[in-house]
Structure formats: C-alpha cells, structure tokens
Length: 157
Image 1 (cartoon, one colour):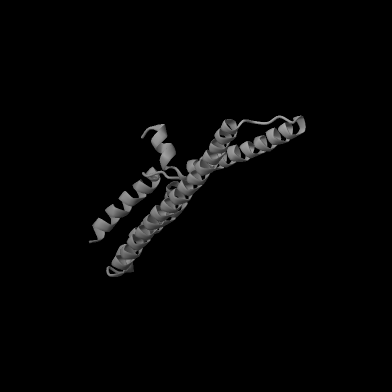
Image 2 (image 1 turned 90 degrees about the vertical axis):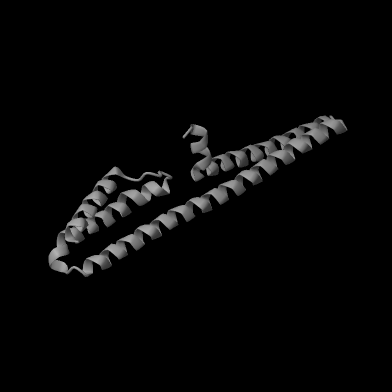
C-alpha cells in the first residue's frame, strides 16, 4: 500500500487534513479582513475583476473545507463500523467456542478454557487497539494464542 493510499484510508489523516483546511480558511478570512481594513484606511479600491477573483478563491476554500470535513466524518463512521463488525464477530466466536466447550465437561476442557481466556484477553488488549488504528493484520501474539487454542480444541474433539 502506497503512502497516498494509506493516507486516504486513515480516518485520522482525513481529520487532520480537514483541520488544516479549516485553519487555511480561517487564515484566509483574517487576511481578507486585514486587506479590507488597509484598503479602507488608505482609500484604495479594487476593480470588479479582482473582487470577483477573490470571492471565487474564498468560496472555493470554504467548499474545500466543507468537503474535507464531510469526507472525514464519513471515513470515521465507516472505520467505526468496520471495527464494530470485527468486534462483534470475535465476540460471537468466543461465545460459540465457550458453549462448545461446555458440552465436553470441565475435566477435558480446563486447559482449553484457560487458553481461550488468554486469547480473549489478548484480543481485547492487543488486537482491538490495532484495529482502531487501522492495522488490518492484528497482533502476531494473538495469532499464536489462537493457533494454540485451535490445537487444544482439536485434541478435545
């Protein structure tokens, strides 16, 4: 993934970009106010073409700021939706495995339950924060625990 694609898929980058656009628009507004006051004090007038050009640039900055804020909001909502879906899937998987282990009894499943508990803790502590940051692969440590849990569950059945 190129740096540009990473920039486009990261909600935090969209938000930073939207803030920068907002700062630029605010600075443009301040600059326009200063120019207006200087022109008023000195008695200088701009021709109609210069006024039209300045207005187009100013409205363009506002439109760009609105667009970036909209994209930022949409991207943040999409990212939250993806993370929420992954979290629900993981939760359903853990509940399903726990119910499956109940059928075999506590004598045969105590080691597997301990591994499953370690896996759930690792997912919450490591994978979910990585998902929130936009990392698609997750933690290698969680993957190793998942493989160990799968192995122990395979020995029970």
